[in-house]
Length: 265
Image 1 (tube, rainbow, N blue to C red):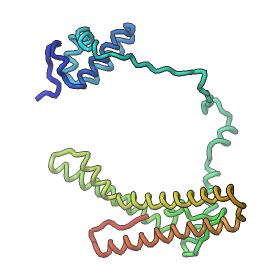
Image 2 (image 1 turned 45 degrees about the horizontal axis):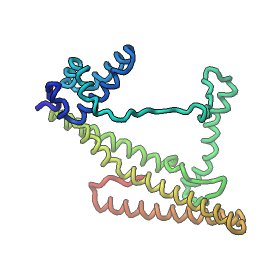
Image 3 (image 1 turned 180 degrees about the vertical axis):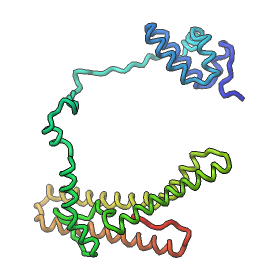
Image 4 (image 1 turned 90 degrees about the horizontal axis):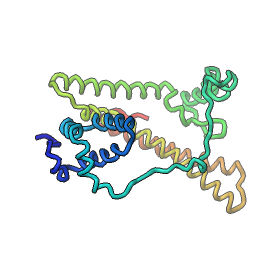
């Protein structure tokens, strides 16, 4: 029942592909210096099954002779240093305080960002129709409203409870099945994955619309920015309407099936 039986060296040709790979690696080991050979041998031996490790430790020279005919072409990797461009990145300890503040955001920067989208959040909570402009957008603020935050918290708690319940079930049965736990978590968070995919498709459609506008401006007379913005807002509204209809249909199906998980953005 052993996966890799210990065989005499004259039978090593008939072993599995894994054994052949080990043999070929042994041949390369013998061509290194003694220090490199000792290090490589230790690393290679630790990755073997116990049965092959015994064969390797006892008959390494024999293994290399048996597998010598398997090595027909010597493969090498060559790095052209002259054709590469090297960019030196300074360590943070070697940077001044001003350079660090210029590169990374600090707490005041994050506070300013949060303050900047408070007016948009208030419009969202009042249900005001917000048109997409260069200064205002609701993208990325889905979970900043009270309703969105509650949905996000519900998704987290629902997934955690599903995993904990499965772990408790396995403990009571004396089993350990990580694949089953992964499957349970995937099922509990599937609606979140679908929602994230929907948002990604919306962003993709928006970017493609910008690319098409950019291409048309190169082939014909450039359009006025007002017309471009109207077209962009139209595409965004269509995407939001499609997503809203899908969410409503999902909520309707959840009401019909009380055992189904709640829809989430």
